[in-house]
Image 1 (cartoon, rainbow, N blue to C red):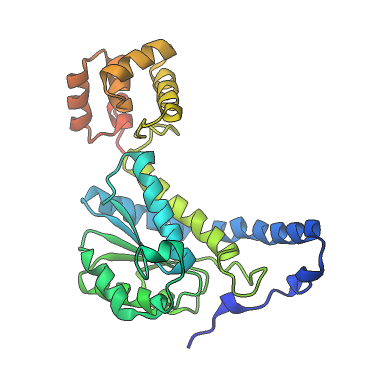
Image 2 (cartoon, one colour; image 1 turned 180 degrees about the vertical axis):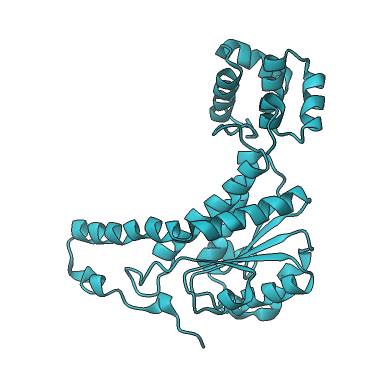
Length: 296
């Protein structure tokens, strides 16, 4: 069995149960400050992972997050939030947790130790897909099952872990390892390890979406305007990019059924709705490519 770094005791928090509430909070915050620094040290690997995912997306591939416990829930969170943010289908980015949907809300004993379940859950993968396995300890047999199946069908694999000595680090195609050090409470990897994983998953999904043209500058141009807050955001985005009034932006969005990119193209290029949709289709839906004639 490999050394489990995530189980080490944190020397600086041995007295945490004796501290005042304020000092307890300060101690936890001091530990959290270390996370971003450690994640930053993995920038090259994270960038490489983003490029892999974006490349597979452009081939029609999908991104799958696999994890157990906290790691699995973080994968599901990132996958589910990508759908409304970037208007992608729920098939394009999927989160799968050991133990099934029940494990999203409660612990399923032994789920992370089930190699066969991991292998079975990964049977949906094909050779265009990317499997990201997430684990603080890097040792769940469930994830080793996922990796076994991914290897058989030649899917790309990426590991997000906090333990360079874990099995995942040995088995995946690309490792992103952020050793954040012992947790404030020994073994509670939902703390610093979970924060590191959340940061990394945010970068993987957001970075890949940027690379395939799902943003324009730093605007969220593919969001689904499904409520008043998002409709207001859509109006502001169209108004700023097309350099028109909010009134004109709203009028065009109503004509375009709240499709932000279509509204922008119509306003900037003076095209009708159908012509704008056709131009976007010709340019793979990439607004930057259409408006600026730049290769992405």
